[in-house]
Image (cartoon, rainbow, N blue to C red):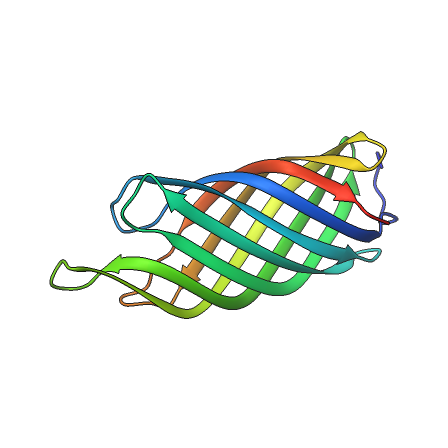
Amino acid sequence: DVGLGLNHHGANVFAEFSGGRTSQGEGIVWGGSAGAYLQGSLLGLVVRGTALPSNSSIHVYDAVLGPRFAVSLPFVRAFAEAGGGMGHSGYYDSAGNLNSDWGPAWQVNLGFARTILPRVEWRILEGSYAHIYTGPGISPITLSTGVTVHVW
């Protein structure tokens, strides 16, 4: 787990606490993200859902699927994920009215994790940028922390 290597693989589930900005001037939204991934030596496949429902009139929800890359570095594991899917979001239209709708979505995540128990990793910090194509489009930027459990 420590040192430059590509040998970690298997099935994993994760849950995170997230906070972010929606790009609509509504302040910070709070929520979380959860999902699962299969990881090979370098390449994996991730499915994740993100819900940022609180502290704003604009709520953000998305579910994406895509590739995952991970490599073990000294003291941490670095990972990058990119996925596409569907999202639901509130947005302000050109007249200033609050609306909400479903639309295509994509999300890119970069983060660092550290093993804290034999089957548990702490997702120290993860940053994400997403876009949901509803109304004029909404682009939440979030920071998260959480845990990963290695199933096998």
